[in-house]
Image 1: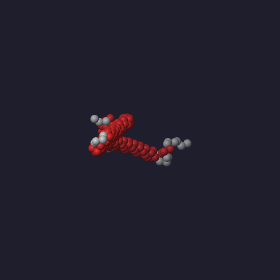
Image 2: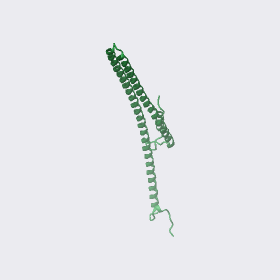
Image 3: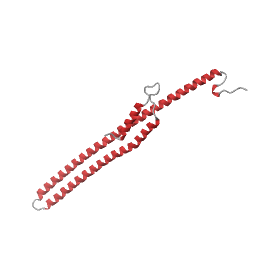
Image 4: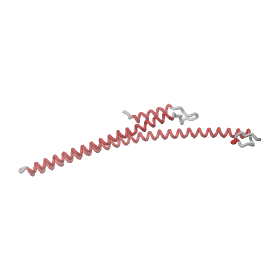
Length: 190
């Protein structure tokens, strides 16, 4: 199941693929600014939601770790209580001490194993969430960069074309009135 961010990125890619090429170009396209801005705006709105979702996953990791620590502490406490009860009994003091130590060691070992598994699982979830978010942001960064490059090139070409037209008109006017500066307009002499 894909996230809304992935769907928006897919929509942006489909939109870009459906855009017409700029005249005399096989790489530059013409985009509807409002449509692409709407997509980027929605992407900005959805990204924090995705990040919050991954923060909840990380918070769950902390809850798992806390639960594992509590279970380990409870097991150690229970082992210590059992140890104290056994040592209080007169006839089996030596056996009780050994048994209690074994229980404490077993409890500690089990607690450490639970904690290690919970930590490894939480770190895996955290790393996955960070990688996923970074991949989404990298894709978005690429799309925005391509859009900026395309728009910059489009407007640069437009300005160059307008300057070329201006130069031709200026040159033609200069040919019509060679003694007059064409940029001053047509002023009649008194």
